[in-house]
Image (cartoon, rainbow, N blue to C red; front, side):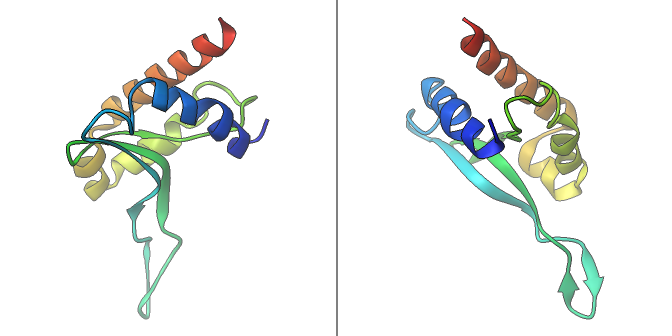
Length: 117
């Protein structure tokens, strides 16, 4: 199962079941831009960094979630999420690397435990 199928069949339903996008004040920001991209000079920027999911509650961004293909390791997206958190303006927006890791791995555990049950 590829990343898009994992999102549609597992992540989106799990987020909804957990109340994201359902509970008043909660939002799921998909393909959320973290930065505009590295400044390369001459008025150009590199590719922007985009998170698969950012979870927001009452206008406060609480978590980032990186989707991966279903057969990838449980922690495959942690380094990518940490990279986002290490960017100065992303840290203010999404929380510390430890917060992001805890949220990501907690959500993935919930997702995988539910699929196995």
